[in-house]
Image (cartoon, rainbow, N blue to C red; front, side, top):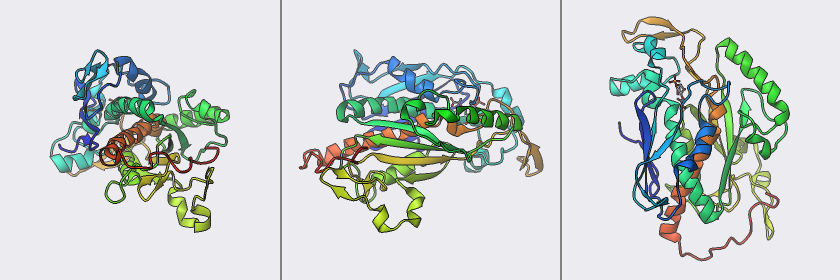
Length: 367
Ligand code: EPS
């Protein structure tokens, strides 16, 4: 299988299967001199992990990162950084019944047609387990972006099914297992998720992400538009079916007078564009969101076919997420950070000494 590498200058190659001995990645192109230690990965990996709340998969992985190469005395050397996480809680028997059938709505069917062979244990390479290494690689990117440019990437859940936040508080997001910005709604969410779990069904979700501190000028206008690269990055996450940048599909109903972000010497008056104009960052906060489909591995029986093309009825047992979007916020943040890191290095390579280096106006007033 090819296409396991992401990024041009900050290139991340991931490997491993959900039920194999380990998963890992190689990060090539990281600038030298960045302080990195195994403890740096803990917080973000825990935020993404399964089994940290009763609303996600109950698989319990330690997710301990081993740094195999690319650092000396705690600093990156500019050489490939290899990271390894050993799988410790595989339970392949959960998948015994789907060895010769296909879960409706799952990549099982398309993998079979592409490769003529598949690893049914936890979906093998198609498992969301792979996103662990995206988050790990992005820890390095986030650290460099923060230290070098003061960039902060943060996200939150913006919808579970029809439920949307009625209030917004960034400080609340990190304090609940849903990454939800409206603490008054947590009881409602728990009730909703309990009923969903009991029904054996699953639900979709939306994650929003904001990157603050990105200077104007990153991105390239034609085939490496910053928004196009962000869209591809977010779309590459398991279960993502839609991506919006800025106002996204809402622009269809807007007039130019409302959509354009007017500029004053003190800053922009709005941010409908999501911080990107002509594929290049404007200096405003970059805003994007991703729509996650409902998990296809569910207990409600559904019609499918077996390898012989015969009709079967299937229910997927095991430790699945009833809403995979619930723990997707750190993954969405990670993909945005990886894109920004790559574009930071691309911009530095071609335009690092172009004037003006300082923005003419700051970002959004009161952003
Ligand atoms: C997943 C199914 C479950 C999840 C897994 C993603 O795997 P298993 O049946 O082996 O428990 O636990 O998520 C992770 C292991 C992880 O670290 O994110 C799937 O079908 O994508």
